[in-house]
Picture 1 (cartoon, helix red, strand yellow):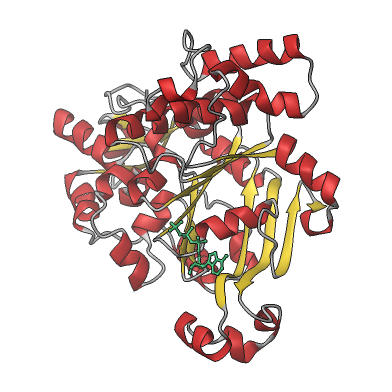
Picture 2 (tube, rainbow, N blue to C red):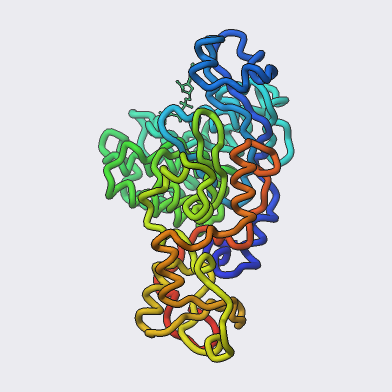
Length: 409
Ligand SMILES: Nc1ncnc2c1ncn2[C@@H]1O[C@H](COP(=O)(O)OP(=O)(O)OP(=O)(O)O)[C@@H](O)[C@H]1O
């Protein structure tokens, strides 16, 4: 199912929550330093702050008791400031870094029990990494760089070049196949890195801050490329970033890390609308709420049959910003419609209260999930996407709020 389909119906949204996990992470720790293994096992040590732990033991808990699932077809973003543990966490998924404690499964298979050859197969075929510093081979052409992973897999020359050419076209590099990396711009090189990962057709793409070295315009281009690829292919992606805007734009769900722990795990709407604590609140303070929160946050029951039967129709996934436009155009309240049914209405005052931050938080259930996630519990990591949380509002077409008779555009 494409992301567009995913966003157009609440039923489809529910299906995402019900999809099987690709990665399942439970109680994961990575501790650097002497006798690291004693740290996760000792409650006295796990209770210490990072600074206390360092001074008492000389150890750093880069990942501390983290649990979550990455579901099939979602873009799972790991966000946090520098040093919060993002790279360590994502490298643990394929054991590029050996975890200290906890469990990791891919499609139910225990990653920590894999032997060398199984691990190689995991990294080559199942979970391909796109690195920040492209890692391209300078003396090879674009085509041969992209074909490299297939070569390593043992695919014949003609077949791998054919496959590579198709992927090169997919990422918009047609015509540049015979250049070498030194003859490309930074953005083009990043596309080669992306194409190389895609060429092996992995189940999951892992992105380690791939765009942070790019200038803002090229960066936006690449973000749109990721959204497009995801929409077209529905491939599962884990994306590391320290950039909140990028996280909100790309993520179906975001795990926000601080000092090795996940302080909140939720949809962009949950993170912006119901921050789990003061740290998260501060983090999202400057986000334009109306561009992230959906009308579900603002809607209320219709007060009369008249109100339920007239006014422009908007989708439940429409952003508050889109609804403001519809309400302003029609000079009346708008109806939130799903499959011909009016779920509720929003008027100017309802919408303004969201912008002002005086509306209720998206949902109690979301808050509970967030709080549990903050506590690092398994239940939170595995919590289904609440119905209210429309993932990926960012990917909607921008004309959702045209007045219509029954069904929103
Ligand atoms: N090999 C190592 N030995 C000791 N400490 C390490 C090692 N690698 C990472 N750390 C520490 O673990 C913590 C998490 O680092 P990590 O690189 O995972 O953070 P990050 O969020 O990815 O940061 P950035 O955004 O700067 O890449 C940091 O305190 C870091 O200093």
